[in-house]
Length: 151
Image 1 (tube, rainbow, N blue to C red):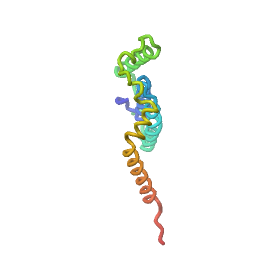
Image 2 (cartoon, rainbow, N blue to C red):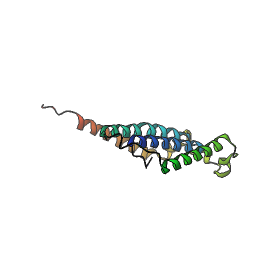
Image 3 (cartoon, rainbow, N blue to C red):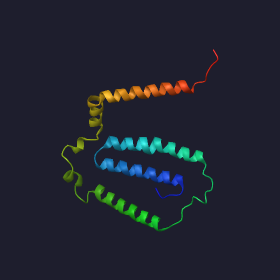
Image 4 (tube, helix red, strand yellow):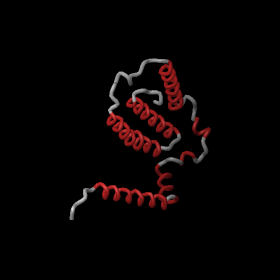
């Protein structure tokens, strides 16, 4: 992703990284974090980034094209090794690795229930302050965006 010359391809590889991170969240039994990772970052943020890249209109497509070189070969080998490791973990050939290495209550962290309990019990005041701050920003943006009338 970092060494790509074409910014659109770099953004697509960043989306693949976000999906890989969501897979790691799922392996840690943090379902809500995985879904939020996909929805917020791979969905909304990356659509915005690709939209900005398209607006920039970088021009010469041939100058941005990639040639096969040593870095691409190393990337393909590392991606294959990562996929084999994920298959090894997901198929259960390595045993239940997570239960041997994780804290006994680690399965409760990151679930929808635990995140909701933490958000609406422990962190209720910061959550409400953040919502009021976002509401103020939206009202301010609407007031600034509306046209001035001569009345």
